[in-house]
Length: 240
Image 1 (tube, rainbow, N blue to C red):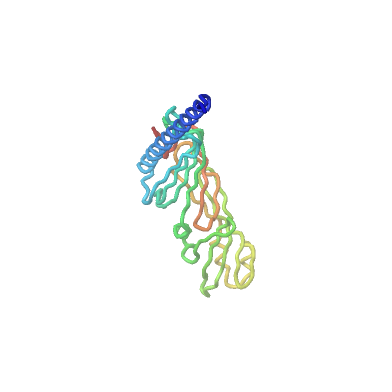
Image 2 (cartoon, rainbow, N blue to C red):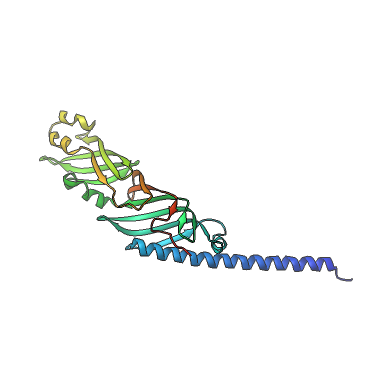
């Protein structure tokens, strides 16, 4: 039986296509890996964290896109970033990053441990320690000359450059009452004065970065930021 030349041709074409696909995939992964390494190097140099930095290119065929000057979407994570007497764990998501360091903008989060939040509470922090529940800040401890155990629930609000902690309710002596009604409870008259709103400035933000949200998570106070389109703010720039 004579071999079918058409069948042989199809087999050769299929083998060639498979080889090209394999080479393309290998090239893409190699370029992507090198680009991620460059992003990590730039982020580590600019953020100077105590802990590790990780970067991921999340756009399909990101490596091959890099050859044309586009990196695509990038996620950068860094632990132990020092900013203004605070130590933060930072995650940044950038859209349509280019090898020239521009992006279409994105978002970021910075997580502050509750030990640091407690220290920033001032005189109130001498008696109560911070935690989180359902997005609200929870302050718990003993206060006053009688050492009354109390739990304070506080909401969080933000402006572009600050967040405000506003105590709303207090649980004491088995009762939960609004802060403004504390004067009616025995031994808590001084506590009401200490439970006024506290505003904390978030200063020295890079150009184009604004604070957009704050919520109390299980692992700390999480601040959310928006990032304007343009040069990447000290994280993924110059990724080529």
